[in-house]
Every structure is written in C-alpha cells, then in structure tokens.
Amino acid sequence: MAYKFDELINRKNTRSYKWDQVGPLFGSADILPLWVADMDFPSPPAVQEALKKRVDIGAYGYAIRTDEYADSIMSWFGRRHGWSLQREWISDSPSVVTTLSLAVEQFTAPGDKVVIQTPVYYPFYDVVRDNGRELALNPLQIRDGRFEMDLAHLESLFKDGAKMILLCNPHNPGGRVWSREELAALGELCLRYGVIVVSDEIHCDLVYPDYEYTPFASLSPELADKTITCLAATKTFNLPGLHTSFMVISNRDMKARLDKRIKTLSIHMSHHFAQEAVIAAYTESEDWLDELLVYVKGNLDYALDYLAQQLPQVKPMKPEGTYLLWVDCRSLGLDKQGLKQLMYEKAKVAFNEGSTFGTEGEGWLRINLACPRFVLEQALKQFCEAAKGIS
Ligand SMILES: Cc1ncc(COP(=O)(O)O)c(C=O)c1O
Image (cartoon, rainbow, N blue to C red; front, side, top):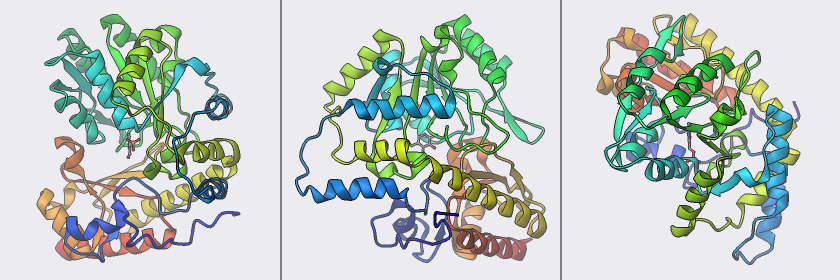
C-alpha cells in the first residue's frame, strides 16, 4: 500500500470533536473514540499539499469560486459514478445538514409532514423539528439481515399528505446502498404523490465491492426535477472540518430559491481553504480512495470476524457502504443507560449509542471503522471483554 492507514495521527488536544469531547461528554479522556463519523487517517497527500500552499499565502482573504472547482466535481461524478452533471445544476452550501435544513424550510410550510426513514442520522430529526415541521416516520424493516424500505407504509404517509422525504443514500447507520430498483420504486411513489426528495448522498463514494451507488436524481429527468441532492467531498476524503458541500439541483426554480436563501443568510462566500482541498481530492486522490476502501474493508472483515468469535450474541448488520458498522446488542439485555455504562465506564470505548438514531436504535451501537486496524482491535477487545463480564 502506498498510503499509511496503519499509523495513528495524534489528534488529542487538537480541538478534535471526536477525540477531545470524550472527556466532557463520556466522563473520561482515555476513552477510545470510534464514534463521530470522521476518519483517523490523514487526508490524501495532494489535499495536504494544496492546503499548505494556501496557508503559505499568508493572507487569508475572501475567495472566489473558479470553473476548475465545478469541473472537478463534474469530472468526478462522471467518471466515478457515470452521472453526467451540468455546471448550472451545482451550487455550494456550507454543509450537507445546512442544505437539508434549508430545503425543509423553503419547500414545506410550518406544520407540514416530512418523511424520514428511521433509524437515521440524527440531524434528520432536528432539521424537521427545528423548522417547525412534523416528522412522519417510515421505520426501515430488517429483512434478511439488512434494512429495506417499507413502501406500503410510505405510500400511506404520502396519501396522508407528506410533502417531502429526506432520503439517506447510502444509509447511515445501516450501510445500505439502495439499489436502482429500490430507488425507482421509491421514485415512482414520489412522482405519484408529488413529493419532493432531498437526497443526502454524502456517503456515495464509500461503497464496498459488489455494490453500486445510484444517484437518485440520475434515475430520470422527471425525478431529478423533484430532487435536491446533497453532496460533499468531505466524508470521502476526511475534510469535514473544512465545512464545505454542494447541492445538485436541475430544477431551476428550486435551485434559484435555495441560492437566494443562502445569499440572504450570507453563507454564500467561498471558504478560503475549501476549494483547493476539493479540487485536489477529486482530481489527484482517486488512488488514495481506492486504497482506503480496501483498508476499511479489511477493518470491516476483521470486526465481523472478531465479533463472531468473541461475542457471537451481538449481531452486526453487514454494511454495503459507509465506514460505519451498526451492531445489534439487544441480546446483552441492557437499556441505553446500561450500554453507555458498558462502553464508557467498563470498556473505555465510545461507539455511538443507537437510540440517538431513533427509538428503533435502542440496544444497538454504531462503530466507526475508519481508524488504524490496531485501534479497532484494541477497541473491540476492550468492548468484548467488558461485555463478557456482564453476561
Ligand atoms: C448522512 C450524513 N449526512 C450528513 C453528514 C454531515 O455532513 P455535513 O458535515 O456536511 O453537514 C453526515 C456526517 O456524519 C452524515 O453521515
């Protein structure tokens, strides 16, 4: 391997949310953090070089957006995902969650129902509730050990007047990479009931072999016309602290409305550092991503094997994408407080406690696999030993 995924960067005392919040939040600074979804790997060398050059300018003034930036996005999605984007469909947004929230605000009215498919990344709840809209839950069903959408229930929510659905494609926390057929079936319902789709596709590049990401909006021009796709290079290349993302919207009116709102909030200016990083990621770091995916797959295989050997009563859901592992720990017989105690006090590890993703997540944990293997080994060892101590 050309890249050093086995070396741990010391992120302690770097204002790292993942590493430096474990003390304040979980009670002890020596807890191993495998929770927040960023990676412990260095970003690609080309990205680091580009950022260093930008630092060397010494003056950190207002920046403009260049064609090269949009070109790098269009070229990436064309060659990596076979999705042909037009320049005028792309706009920047400070973060994917910002886009989710603005889309809810702009395209629904107070009191409207917005569908989310639970368990799901917790800000999906916040952007609906905090905008004064109502959540319409379509819990995912577990079939053959993986999540599937309940289309019959979804249709009942649409019939009942839901105006929008927030889709997570690939899905966090279950790691489903929705198939073309599943997305087409969902799309058919959305068209039938005139439902707007806000599709969070931030995990799109993190897909395991044998699975393929399908951009929801690529299914048909009719669906694209009802869709706001939220994307970023930040999850793929470990840049989330740069706070940069983009939206793809082919519907001119919807795009104009979001652009205007972003301008009104004065969050439209280009970040001094972000563009260089995104360009270097999309144009010079594809081999890094390919190696990363091999490494993370190795971590996944290790974790699945280790848990099967050491703690067979817990059942991981085999992910098709994302670097996250969703693990059913209900057999341990612990409530959420008990699981927290087990993690933070006994095992000294921090995975995400499942109920933060919805009530269906109670008794589940989410493990972040994007760390050097030895860190994962240590965390799983500590967790399994502590869990055996209680059962
Ligand atoms: C599904 C999903 N959407 C959005 C985000 C965060 O994106 P941003 O930092 O651009 O708001 C995450 C981060 O974990 C995520 O998993």
